[in-house]
Amino acid sequence: MLIFLKGERNSGKTKKVYELYQCLKQNGISVSGIISIAEMENNVKKNYYALNLYDNEKKLLASKDNICSGKKFGGYYFYEDGFDYSEKVLMENIEDRVKIIDEVGRLEMNKGGFYKILNFLIKNYRGNLILVVRSSNLKDIVNTFCLKEYSEIEIKGSIVEDVMIKLK
Image 1 (cartoon, rainbow, N blue to C red):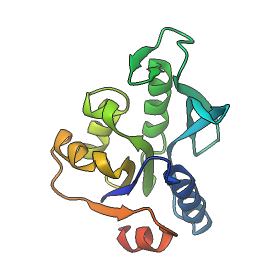
Image 2 (cartoon, one colour; image 1 turned 45 degrees about the horizontal axis):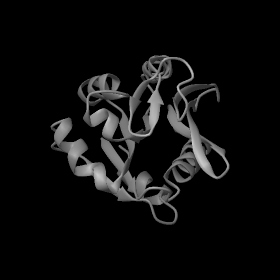
Image 3 (tube, helix red, strand yellow; image 1 turned 120 degrees about the vertical axis):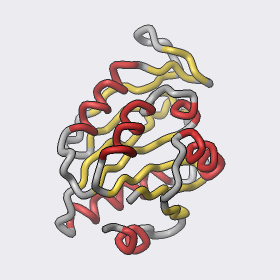
C-alpha cells in the first residue's frame, strides 16, 4: 500500500509524521525510514538532515551554503552523501511493515534526491510505503512515478487513526 501524507509548506508535516512513527512503534508495528529535519538560523531553514528513524543518526541532505560541493536546486545545495546514506537506511529492515520517506518533492520529479530508491521501493517493497509530500506536488509526483493505486491523507489534526485504517 502506498500512502501519501499531504500538506502545505510549513504545515507541520514532519512533526505529524514523527508522531505517527512513535505511535506505530508503540503499537508494535515495525517501521523505519527517513524524516527531513530542518536546522534553523535566524528563523530561516538553513540546513536539512536525513534522520534515520531507526537509530536517530542524521546526515546532511541540503544547505543554503555550499558546504561540500553540493548540487544547487532551488535555494539549496543538495549532497549526494546524504541521499546515499538515506538509500542505505531505506534498504535496511526491508521486511518492516511500514517505511516512511519525508519529504518527496520537486527534486524527485527531476529524477534527483530519493528518486532512485523510491522507484525501487514502489516496484518491489511489499509493505506500506508512506510518503510525505506538499499538496501542490502530489499530482506531479503521481505522474513522475506513473502511479495508479495509492491513498491520500491530508495532514490536519491527528493522522494516526486515518493511517492505521489504511495499513494492511
